[in-house]
Length: 286
Image (tube, rainbow, N blue to C red; front, side):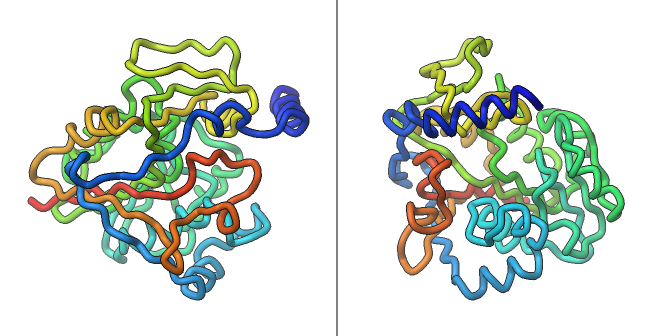
């Protein structure tokens, strides 16, 4: 708790993402370069606000506004997954921020390496919390209908991101779907930490220490964030998806402008790599 308070004070004095925002910036995605179609996902403001009022009450209350990127993430996966009442739904590396309590489906799971005390309240709502790595899911083959992953894949260390993609393709049922949001892609593969003595592993890319960066997420997120290059995104994720899966990238926009943007779903604490949001969809077709 004391260390967390120190981090907040330091970032308040120094500012946020001082180094990251200078060198780690989003790059436009070319579908020809990544061999994945890019689809526009339009967010209607009235529909979004009505949805947030019904499905994201606790998250909106926590952040004090529905116009927060976490609410936007939840809205996107909800709309793309279209979870049915007879389906089994998994929130991978999820927890406190979810719409699970507001939906009806056959089974609800949250899988994460650890849970904040607030997340434990979900158990009282019939949601099963499972402690473990998303790279080793405790589910049989073809047993899960829908999977979401909200602002977590960038925190997966070593090869957990690769293992996660392999597990997703193993556990998804026929016609099952996984939506991962957001995709952080820059010109290089960056391995970022806000912890001075962070221990890196062998991986192609540039190691960066920025004590003011919000991307690594502090202790709860392992003090680490990965920002993919186009090549590392293809090599680590896309290349691990079998041919019997449909892969798409959804680019979020509102009123024909990409979001988040500096005046919409964004605040001064966030890194510019969050602009704009893209979601990866993986769907088993056979």
